[in-house]
Length: 129
Image (cartoon, rainbow, N blue to C red):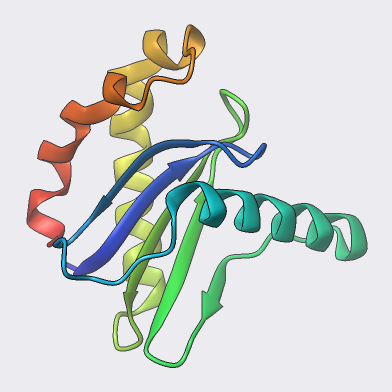
């Protein structure tokens, strides 16, 4: 099982529904700035090349992204160490996306911006830290 440094659920409009990181000492960009960046980046790439971005690599970490086509086309994103295998992380993100969509379908459909509505999802991430 891969180890996550951070995990996000964002919509394609750049709004964060859920964010959690491994521990408070991990340096992280503001979740709203991050979501806006990813959303904008994804839009530019899809318009210019009609492809989706699957990962973004940095010097010491990488972002792996799995999109869904329901509820505002959500993105499930994990930041991991470079050593984690993309395929394995993507498989776990797909599992987590199914759990999230099953658990919170009513909350997502009626969501008014309160991230606390998804706070209980944290329990599903415990084994990834």
